[in-house]
Length: 279
Image (cartoon, rainbow, N blue to C red):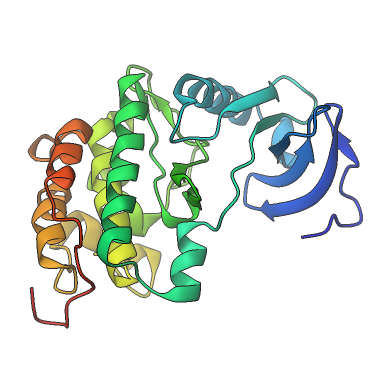
């Protein structure tokens, strides 16, 4: 997407080439380092730059992203969380997001579905091993690179031993992919909240819709907290793995390490979405 009128020509000395997208908190641009390496620069919207609470959250995002830089995430190249308008540059990962892939081609199946599940579980394992909870796993935060899935956007992540910072009056997260504890007691969210979110994401990847799928975010949130997930269309072998990840109490879910072992034990070809009413 081309740069728009009013977009900066450079950020932190990095010339901008294109606008990759914009969300509620900031805009992401494609830029290049002096050596020609492509990077994605997230520039925080001006209206948040003077918000001290938001600046704390952005510093936490940068710190979390630096801690988890590895094979399954976008490595931090540079950042200026104290700048007048804060920004962070990460390695640019080429490929569609999972949301874009499902919208264009429909649900994943077979070996592709298994590979996605294992790749994301490996990412989650590595994220948790350095003491970070992502807290916003969703299809638009997964990029399907040629080398495998990559988890991006640590905007609402936190260190597992750090008190959660919430913005007053806002639900931070995306209800169809949030855990019950995120909706009920966000200050107590731990690593197994990410396991719940990963399971909802895998259901979406396999069927084209999440296990909690209502017409409004409020109804969806109610379903997440109080109702059983809709898993009828999930391929049977995958269903046996994701179902325990979706229990309401976090202590009843497997860890990311345990989930990874369960996924690795699945057959190479998981098949496709089952017909409604069949397992």
